[in-house]
View 1: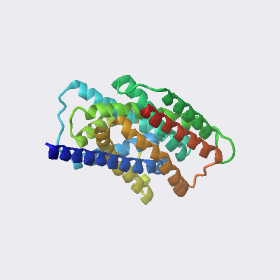
View 2: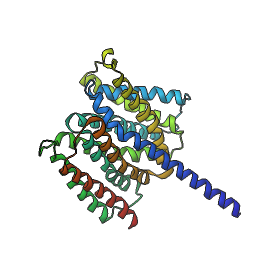
View 3: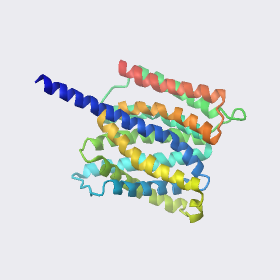
View 4: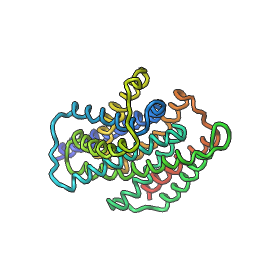
Length: 306
């Protein structure tokens, strides 16, 4: 009936709107996490910060949804483990280490190229779409932009190769995570318990790294209100809340469409890094940022239009 079709259409519009809101919430919070991480890395090592924030986030997810989730298929378990390895453990490890060597604004801009890797992963593993010429044109723009950012510095030309390349590797990990999270979402498990499962595997894979690189957290490190507040912000906001809202957005909108919101992260990061960390953006890094963002938009928009 016509009324049924109208109701169904309204429901789908409302669902899509919810997906967009959840994606927007995620990127607004994530865009500021580079600054919180940069501050905390003055007192914590990358693996200490990583393990602390996700253990706290894991506990919060249990509080949000205390029911246990039964996985019905061993292949599903492998997807959760893969998502935990790529999106929880490796992405944030590379991001944290990158922040030791380069500006927070650099990391924010460079990791925003993850839609390229999402597109490649989708093409290889989901067969959703073919890679068009515009994808590669955009990629060239982005690579040139990243090179300009890497060679820019507050005191003249400076190569931030280590930090910037680690940011690229982090973006690759997020590309793989986005596809694994999407496939995990198709299994039909509740979002919060499914996200918690990914956290569990991510934390499990962090433990050997903590053993190798050392985990020596002391009470004095939590002594300053700034450290405590930033850690809670990363754990509760960026981990527990954002992973749930992001994974829900991916379920509703799909991995490719949701990835468009990643374009907002560098803008938020750059503004926040200038205000909070007093980082200076040179003409070269500004031009590189514009080129990088232009490349991502060309790849995404023109590729979808083709």
